[in-house]
Length: 497
Image (cartoon, rainbow, N blue to C red):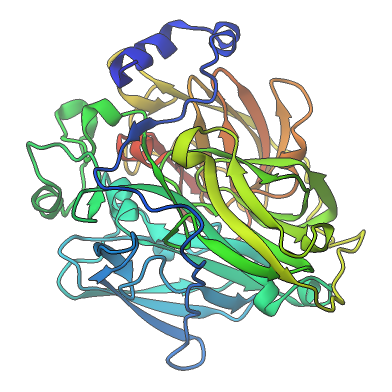
């Protein structure tokens, strides 16, 4: 079924019929690689380097192109923070207040967003707040007045977030605090940040992405420095080919930039910080031949108490902080992290090999934290994510209109935001953190636990969230985190007053 036909199909089916037709898990269009794919579980899992401050409270990172080996035997040009993919991991502390100076030596403009950060509006990575190519620079101010959590950072440039993240502009950021430090959780070599994403490759090893042939990626990006003000309704050329408007899914699964890697572990507990950094692909993660994830944290910090899962659904932008006890497997076991939403190569994610026994003084306590309590909402607002009859991805019937807020919540208040959709739309809210209250009027899923900043709104579903607006006044956004949808104007501003 072609992308266009499928989109038409989605437009005429209601939720019940959609589920009955077996299409409820579709979230993008597959882009196949043109080179021979490597055998899974032959490349060691890399761990991104930890960023080092140039002086207390100040980091400097340069966005630059570099050639690195991703597929064995070939090299790939990446656009990377520090010339690496993923970028360096920022290991930060609550309340430490840091500045990250980003210098752009690429040929395209950028805007860096700290996803999940409680950040002043001038440092939030608004899509038209651009750092010029060829040596432009910007200081991003991060006060870090927020709980310990797994965050990530990525390019957020107007209309070109998808291809620029696809080409490497992403990395992880960990915020720690005293509450987390007091817990006997795995740490050091037994704490693994895992940035999961999918990509496709050309025969020469370069990233394959379906940019419109009429424009060319680099030339069009340079010609679009100032973003669009009139939007897609006025003939704007999108950064993705029209056959991939649903979103782009690759056939190679990368973890920390390596294809289907393997990690040697001891028969002990490990803390896995799971991030879905894919453009559009959703995963339902499971351990094979069996096992459980003990969830200790969500997007925005530790849960109050652990939650056990046999599998975890994770949409683009979401994070799960989990503990896996590898002492449950005999030494020599191969434990595979699989994606049950895919067949073929994309079904495998990575593998753990239990190499030997070791002492383990870690534990997952019954009480993890005292997260913020619920606050009574002052109002309810509705945001409908939908493809219009004209083929435009919209929120409340409008493509993105920079500077036109759809809501003006008050600082220090909470609101119920009712999110509805016609397709899979992972909804991300900048600044605000939220609790999932209900799905279609029923209790949320166990995997919805904790304070979040991104939630998967499935086809013909209504999700109620309780959003808290703490931190700063100013202009922020909500948008679909299917990056192709975002680039095609499925974004909206809100202003905290």
